[in-house]
Image (cartoon, rainbow, N blue to C red):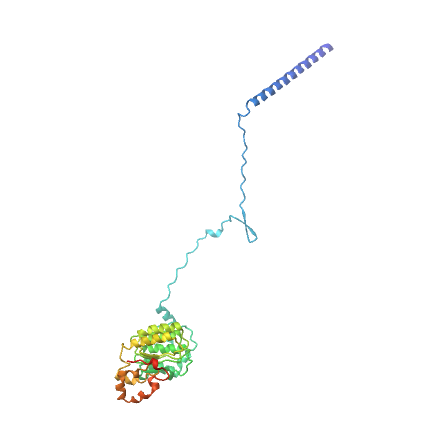
Amino acid sequence: SSSSSSSSSSSSSSSSSSSSSSSSSSSSSSDSDSSSDDDSVVGTTKKRVKIKRAKPKKPAKLKVRGTTKRKYRRKSSTDDFVVAPAPPKEKPLTDEEVRKILGEDSTAFGANNNSWVRRSSRQPSKSQLDAPGVKDLLDKLRNNDSDMVVLKLKKYLNDSDIAPIVMDATLDALEENTNCQALYIQNFNKAMRDDQMMHLLRVLQTPKNRTWCINIGETYNVSHKTWTKFAKGLKHTNVTHMYASEHTITPKIKDRFRDVIRENRSKHRLHIDPNNLDVIVQCTHCWWNPINAGVLQPYIRNSSYYHILFEKETLGLKGTTDGKNIDKI
């Protein structure tokens, strides 16, 4: 029995060795086959390439004044609101509406005035309008008093430093007047400025105004530009004789004045009418006084004004003019 068991074990061992040898041979043969297969497909099969997907980049950061902000900001919640439309523009006030608001024409001077001049509503010197001389002057101008035919403002406004508001009131009243022929408005430096000069020009240009003689000397606070405008606008007036201080205007403006007033002498006959001699003889201190007109000499010799022919200052040959300024008619 022991011999049989040993023989069986040897047979089993031989069988196992044969199986192992067979398995090793089969594995070697399979390896050789696989290697031969790999060698046969080299260069014919496509290799799989792995594609790496790029990761999304973070938004770039924008540096502003030392702080870090993202390039794409989050939309503000206020963007959802609807912006209200702009309010409509207001129309500018008309002259009539402004006059109604300011009420200067009725409250400042107590009269209805169709010509409106815009001035500041602040008038600290308004109390000067209550002076007796000012009230008397304004009343006589509006009522065409006979004393206004030859008006010398110094007689009523004896203070040369009056405020512009007084001159404005005077010019407003003069605009209503229809009998003033000669106006002496000289030596009011504080009251006579650019605005008042242009106001005076408008008064002289009104059709009903009869002023043909004017003395506006010693007026220092008027600009060269305003003097030029006054000289140009004078051709639309009845002024035929005047005087302005040579040291306040340029020679060119003076020549312009004299050329214009000479042309104006053909517009009317008040300055050479013998029936108007009582007014003419009072029009002195001009560049050329109207009493020098040749057509008036026979009438003057036969009148009570004969002595005037021997008064050089009255004739304008001394003081206000010189030989080269003498005109002839």
